Amino acid sequence: MSERPPISPRSPRAALEPEQVPPPPKRSDRARNPFVIVGNAIFTILIILMIGAGATYYYGKQTLESPGPLQEDKIVNIPARAGKRDIADVLSREGVINVNPWVFIGSVFALKASSDLKPGEYSFQKSASLRDVIATIVDGKVVQHAITIPEGLTSEQIVTRLTDNDIFTGSVREIPREGTLLPETYKFPRGTTRDQVIQRLQQAQKRVLAEIWERRNTDSPLKSPDQLVTLASIVEKETGRADERSRVAAVFVNRLRQRMKLQSDPTIIYGLVGGKGTLGRPIKRSEITQPSPYNTYVIDGLPPGPIANPGRASLEATANPARTRDLFFVADGTGGHAFTETYDQHAKNVAKLRASEKQIQNDTVEPADDPAPAAAAPGAADTNPTATTPAKPTNQKKPPRSGRQGAAQQTTSPPVVQR
Image (cartoon, rainbow, N blue to C red; front, top):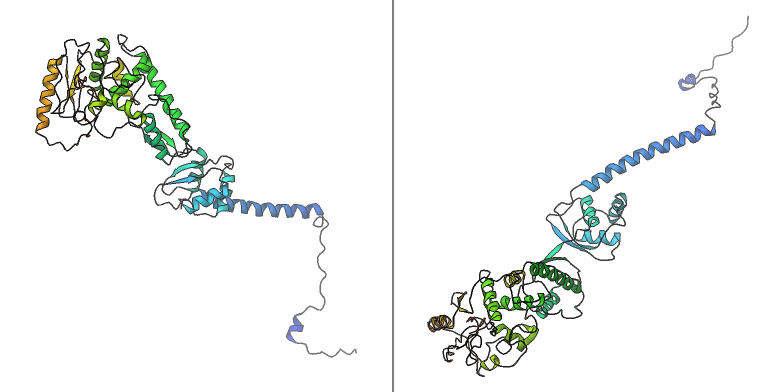
């Protein structure tokens, strides 16, 4: 009978441990294949990239499409030669975007717009998204500023206005020839050079003048577009009322036909001050007969050139004047003029105007040196109560030179004629 080995007491933990550890499973030869290892790595990387790309796309889309921080529409100037980082800084400073500059740059690349960003002044809408902001700059639709050039200004006065306007750059090399600029409302982007503005006004004038000259009354005594501009400039200075332009033009056209002097006060002023445009005081009597190439009280026919830049309406009226026989006009005291065919009728209108003026206190102080009648306009009769009323002309083709006798007259401004 064999003896059993004594039983040694074991701890609970030792009792649970196996007496012999099984060997680890053998890795298959396929798992150890380097192509499998590389393939698994590539697959893992692709999965990670896909997840990252999806997250980036979602974040990018949210960034591009989310409403921006602007609380109201705003105009921002993107300076010339600004880089993408500079543009991002400007937009961020102006409150147009609220993203990191690198996010802006990344968005520009994502939208394939890195070479399409244009400088200029842009209007960004309220809550504009980053996509909208970039699209606005890429489209290059800069803000257009409306600039109005009033009718009747001289070229020198127009250049002064352009010089005083800070949306333009550069200087005007020379004052344009009188009458070659078309007064109108134009739109220009900030940064336009002043020479470019002048060129556009000149091109517009050439186009409009050519159109109007083609539609002119061929029975007119005006023989060239230049003569049309010259007379239109006188009409422009004589009246600002649309309903009177064609009739004022008719007076001067009728006078040209009858070889009468035009006798327009604005031509006296231009002969005295040239492109400055305004005399700043009433015309003196001595200046009415003062020789000047532009003084139509002295010269026959038209002056050598325009005395201002007439607008489209005055050019139209001069090319197709009213069909009247009027030879005179005088201010009627209501802002308009009274037109007449004969000197006798004109003298009555002048007397009526003087009587009306006597009832109104006039604060205008005339110059001490033999001043002209209290401010005249397009050829009118002398309105100075102390002046001698001109005698009735015996030949309307050669009106008397004594006193002031223009085709018309107004009492509120120096330009005009008087007969």
